[in-house]
Image (cartoon, rainbow, N blue to C red; front, side):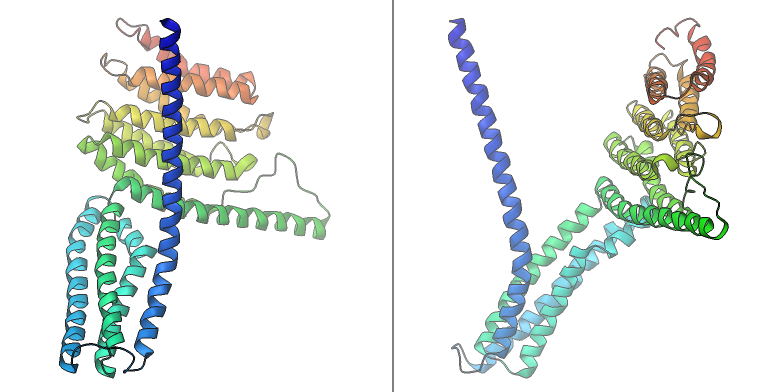
Length: 401
């Protein structure tokens, strides 16, 4: 009986895996078909419309001339009216989102390629109907105008769905992340190339060769400014979400922010320094969010902020450079200090998981620095930072830390 039951469970598990693989494959095929359809359909419709417009007048059949003109006029009215109504209705939620979160909504919605294609297609549809009415109606032009009118209505529905999708703060954060990643890579690579060219020129002119771990490419100020301008609206969204207790929004937006910071330090590589301006500014902003999260209605908000600060510290560990003297760079020093302050500020709250979570990230960061090869003096300094926290935890009912 036991063997039979084991075989049944094994067979059910294998069947479940096969069904899951089949569903995954079907989804992948569907995505490929949809992308191909979206790529091929607009040019095909454009070519068919132009061909129908240029077709001779006697190459079809249909009702009388007055009915054709009425159909074209109706199509032009439908396209113009539907476009005006849809875009007028979308203005209200877009303005509300921009005033609630950040005006960055307007920039990304206005530069969205899909919305621009939809608007261009509606303008083409309206111009096509008016041109067919002005240059003379033919059966083919009437048929093509009807087809274009239907596609315009579908495109406007797609545009409305796209705008509602963009109004999601997590989706907006993804758009900001993709845009900033491209700009950040280009800016850092360009700054490193300019710094290398400057060192090469100095070597040719003076014969002095500068190199080694002490010579680091400075943080490009233009890239820092771009990242701060892009990250600040996301932190504003997180701030509003904290006030409303929206844990999922806080988690998604702060995950995007920490991924951007991690990508930045990864691109900086060994050029990252302990006083990195982006790491310091981000650590300070996350600490302010943690203070605001202490007064939030949801108890799950503060752990998300601490988790984000821990991710910043972890990225700093990977960017830290072991060595002696000026060669040594502990990029995780600033987020470590803020984690300690958060733990001490919340240690008196026995119902809060913040002190334990903050000290857990502190321990992981210290251990990561040791694995990274930083000398014991740096870790000793961190231990000195943790000493006040341990003394506070020795008080009655502080044993949970």
